[in-house]
Image 1 (cartoon, helix red, strand yellow):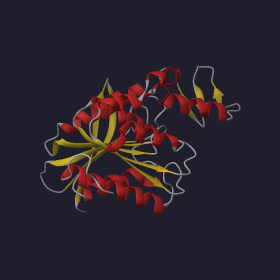
Image 2: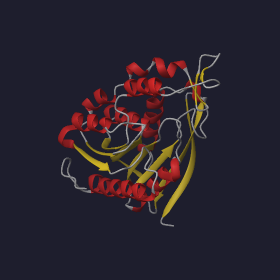
Image 3: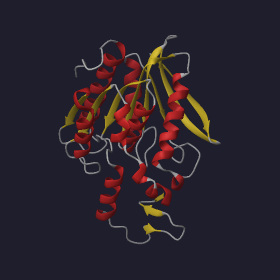
Length: 269
């Protein structure tokens, strides 16, 4: 194996965050990519998508770190306490931890987000100037509008739906009232106004969960700094081997060029 993989427990606000660091062999320092999972997801994701992505990134010479937001996966906390602002806090905390590691070149860092993790990634990119590259996979650009549409179009017959404790049962996931109440304050498009780097946007043309218009919103906001690539016929989490491998290959090659050699705005795909 041409890489090292190490599990870490990090503690934020008294709760442990489960994380995995993938590192090329050698002392470095290496460019680094923080990977963010989606809503109800975890650091593994469907068909090991994020594991495969992390290993592909180490193969091109990057450190890759993936973790479970508090309340998700193996991390401590309750899912019903999850909010997007809370996930942004988690991501910034982990990003800053990663930047401080001796094997990481903090001048060459990127963040990659899947689905709602893409919304979080946009906020991280806007908040920390050390983010030089942003990758958005099927990313949510308008969380308030998206969850409003989902609530209008999703039937939640008992025992699903609203629970006596005020949570909303969506397929066994208890969504807390704080998640819904904080949606209006989350605006990834506005957050990107302070981001100066380049971005790669990949989105399935038949995504039934996050409509392709969200990718177009990001592309419009980022202008010439954005590279938008459609994954023809793909669903939300690229649930076919050919889609998965296409997305990972494009991403690894793009990040290799951006983080190792290309001046901003000159990347190829």
